Length: 123
Image (cartoon, rainbow, N blue to C red):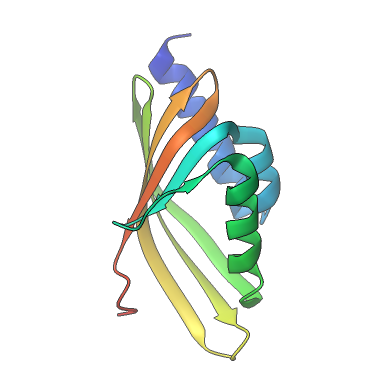
């Protein structure tokens, strides 16, 4: 398999896990120990343990998950791009909708850097 094929296959497997609600399991399986996760222009979260803590904090704000829908997944070499949307009801009872792009750099079957791009205004 080429790097692009491996990267695309791994990105699709990651997306499948996220669609099933297996977010923490996906981090465990697909993120390198020294991975960095970055939200827009914020400072990155560094290290798998810190990423797990970050994701647990996010998930603690979710009362009910409504949907996750991947629109597009593409890869070139060791880089993957995922476009998707998700909706959830937060612990305040508000419906929250996100549309975002994830740009991922992969090495040896693991994400070493991921950056999310989305409109943080909530509109």
